[in-house]
Image (cartoon, rainbow, N blue to C red; front, side):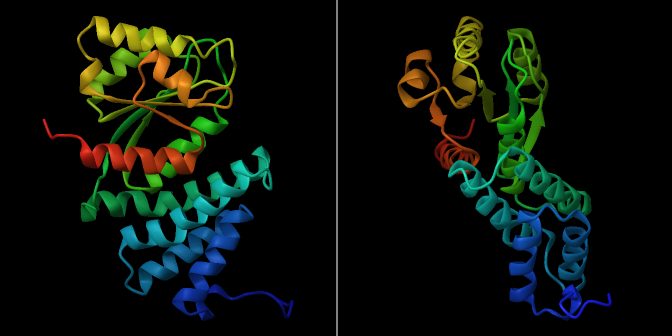
Length: 229
């Protein structure tokens, strides 16, 4: 710590520390994020407040700059990993304190598609927003989705595709849900670069989410307005 310009996190007041954590997340600094999380907890912040104000707001900035082409995939991944490191500290505490769980999401990329950056970002931001997220990974055939839905009973099914050739598989999954009489049990959200709202409507999805920030907003709004079973 010889440099005069080194910032000592513990000497910052709460507002400055949260701002600094947003910057550190943006820069993908894992150790600093973990240290910041621990300092806020020591100062009596609830795990939920640390999560929403320091991490989620920071990731929201990352998500917007990613969408606007200011940040690129490697940088977003670094930020996501820094958030993951912070979540490592918070997750057990959130479970313990019974922090508000907004809802449950099963998410995965469709069969034939091995892209997972966008899906991972959505997963992390959903988790950051208080959802319980079950990520079933990439290249998922219909069976994987149905099995995950039956096992986890989520509120939301999220499907991602990054190729125009794999997009139509989303309809295969939705048609299978309809056939099994399961379609109305879930909110189906779809996303990925080649998709648009018209496509989402044509396959019978509930909504198209153009980026991770929109996915979180849409999920929250739809779960809130969903009649409870």
